[in-house]
Image 1 (cartoon, rainbow, N blue to C red):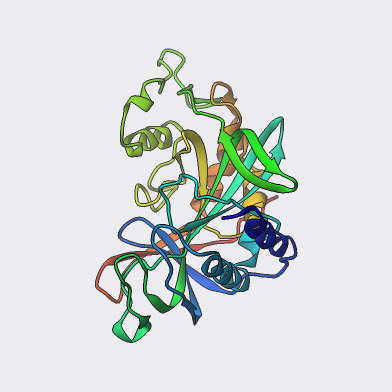
Image 2: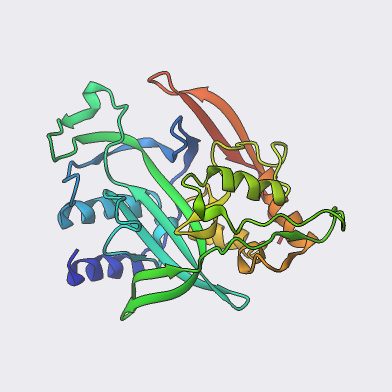
Length: 297
């Protein structure tokens, strides 16, 4: 996007202030989360490789109508991060906890991901264009990562460098045998697939299947931008901040001890999610996710 284009969108985001429309959270068989609403809306077709500004602006308008809490006060990045994620829009907002600066990253997919009925396709796609569809869902991801530097243009964040996860050691105060060696992950970036790494991290943090019902279907902690990240299934900046402040120390410094209080808060948050296995209209497995109230501070 041109500078004036994303500036104009960010001015709109600066004025957004409303509550999200009610929706239900699902994780599909490709492990991608989405929110489904009771009403339908149109996602216009656009270029697969380089979406037009007009199409981006229309889609941002849809997001602000349905998920204003996800994008309020954020900056839309001029390019996807990572760049290969063409068709996704990335909204970011920096925040400070302790001595570390973190970045809230909300991404939403503006491209058609399949599964629509024939009557829901209003204009067929072509070789380089996505179809125009009527839908009731938005695919999204919410992540928080520690950052090393921000690149800004005026009040707009235009790029960032994440604080790289160096391997480190996870130390937990209790339930540790002093004679047991602390597991290190300094070799993890030699691996291509981070899913095994994320499994080891969950194990070290005591995240069992009883605590986190989604298991490997959607990991609440992992490696993004070569940084340790926390992932959330609530497309809301205020709600994410409210929860993150209870256990941000997990991302603060992996070479320091994680207190029992921090770990307990994280486990309580993860345990608040309930999961029901169901089936999509096309016959694929779906996981419906709902959260109990956890307002303990």
